[in-house]
Image (cartoon, rainbow, N blue to C red; front, side):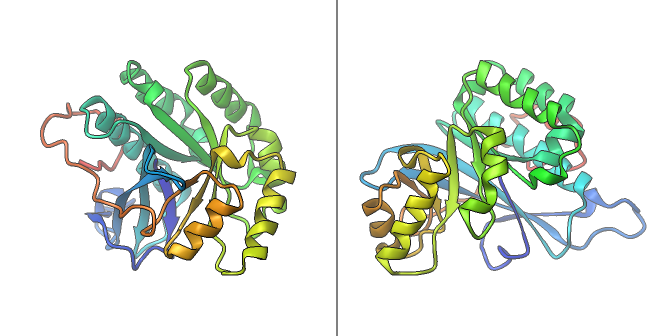
Length: 259
């Protein structure tokens, strides 16, 4: 799944590409990097693998809205190509509301170019619902994804699930991704699970990310969360290379390509 992060993942290892192609002024190229790892998403109670998430973040610079969209479009094309070339069984991808609003045609063009494999994707949406300017475009995209049998999820970023109610009500997600609490207290995890249920989220299709300790995994499983990501679940790996097997223009003429 393609996720999006900035800054806080600077210590994470992974594949890196120069951000220079994203520069607005070629005389002053961006000196930062685009980074990516792939996180397997597995059941907490066993070893069943749901999908692999292509997680992308910037390092050394703050991407603008359009630069972020360019990166996400390139990663979307990369993720679908990985499925098409059998590098992964199922891929998960995160798109921000801003990317869908501004680049809906490009997004659907990429899906259309891989139409036979689109059903093997999961889409996670993220962003600030109050900043949406064209809700009908995002709503139309969500409805279109579901007609293609593509699960639609929501990546929660607020410190409390209750703070995300507007977005949850708007998306009506098929699944959700929540960051693992820092607390080791089982009672705290119970409160998180209770809040998730109260928000209408189904724990049997919810993902707890950032599980770094066995105790976190145990707590997540015991309160009812079904899936997890993190080193205590499965180690990440660099996005597989496609070599020269991806035709030119596969990334839909975005300013950045993930190879």
